[in-house]
Image (cartoon, rainbow, N blue to C red; front, side, top):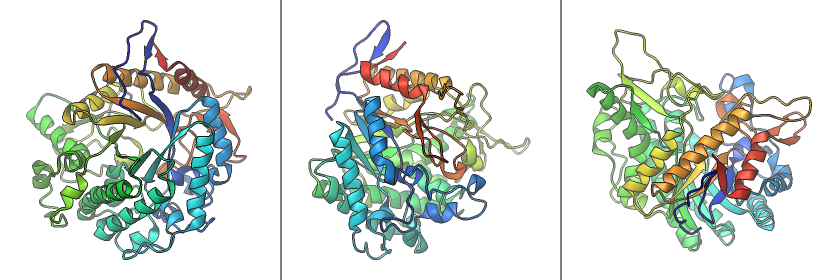
Length: 481
């Protein structure tokens, strides 16, 4: 994965740099199924989804897309599309199913073998694996002893990372430590709309730090166990904009940017937490869980940064003279507004086209975020590790899924990535979310993000029109204007 050169201009298409990685991404709990097979023990999402009232229609990931048994079929689909890379996550409860807060426990050979076989299958089809170590499925045993609010979870995560890197590092060129720690911390521990479903602001901020620490410990473990592999983290950075030009709206945007972006970017890229975030949250916690030396661990140099982007975030100052709007830029259950120390901030309803998640569509945010990070950390390799859209896909009588909305969403956002490259951002790859329709967390199976349609009753996979569009993009290394 060498840093790419600037894209060449074209009159009829946006052509990407030679060697640009074209991939798709998934997460273990959302697609694997086989929840109680191969030695796997429960994760927090098993517990959460089996708790009545937590997930729409009572859906669970027990079967999902049955990828655990059908991975060869799914890899063949990837090859048919021409993917050059596939980003998947490892289910921690498959690897060390007896983990406790004080000990990692024995390694499960069946779990390791599954991912080793998957990697081999990908390589046999010419597809480069990118492995995410943590995509939200924390072993339930660790949550029982405090979860991400407890420092020991970060320590066990570092040890778990070493196990996976030792097993797969000889064939995996890129390990991503964490996926979207914002979601793990705030949606899991502040608003409670994701597993483990806690609503404790102080615990959420402790989780922020312990997730950052887990990244640093995991990065160090990967570098020791597999020196030839690159290390990255994936953040769901927000393009935060004040609704108006008032000082109050600008301050609302500052606070949201701090809690969403800078509380992760600053310790990882610069070795310190933003002073304004610490001050804004002083009534919630004194941040005494940060120990001497922690930020040095967290800020070890990255090889790449993954950025996930779906929708803009518009904020404004709220006064009690009018009802508060809670529809934020993320939509769905996240509109429960997990924002700490933001009681006078609201996320006004955004008008215009939206996806099936209720998320507003604005590709400009993709360009803005990539260019922002490129300016903040010059030379750091960037990758779009997730981008996509849910639509209410319907299969026609001819067996075709004509998802034109998704095609236009992808086309315009790929154009935005190209614009960032032209502006000097060193973007080396793009992963569409998602390869398959799957278990969409608190929404269950009611929202479809895949470029491949899945019939959940029969597990039949069908390429949507967006899959054929993406295959053409990959083949030409270009996006039609």
